[in-house]
Length: 181
Image (cartoon, rainbow, N blue to C red; front, top):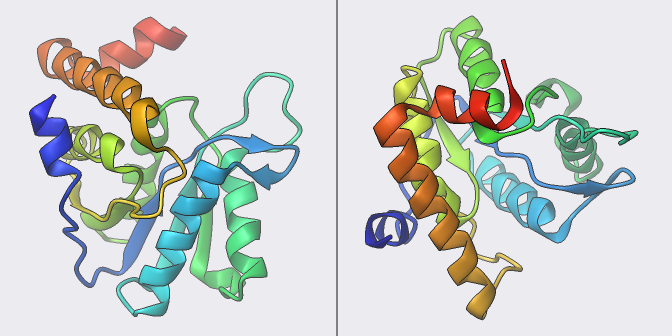
């Protein structure tokens, strides 16, 4: 768990052509507070000139009208990001599934690296998945997360278990076991 915690305490962002915002819940077309914090962090990096394109990720849960990626893209556009500078990748019901498609999108842009934006507790697993897909991750963890105090312990523990299992059997197999095919 220390590895997961320690990694998330550092911002590795550097100028890259693209940044990727990992999805989080949306509620009837409105970003959850977690997703909003990720989007606001990505927007700040974009405005600082660290990335020229923002890729939003995340599919829809069964029964949802909206998906996380499109909700995120609309949020950023409403904040003034030009339409052409936002790419929505509305595929995947977990980090691995989304990252597989993101890796393809990045390669189609002739890129092998990007800034990845997520919560501190999530960044170490994101880096592991990106690396397994041949993508260099310059993590930039959200600093203003709505998840605080004791609630964080659950997330760090879950991530530590997911990272350990991913290293043992591979992130793809974990995704398949969770969702099938």
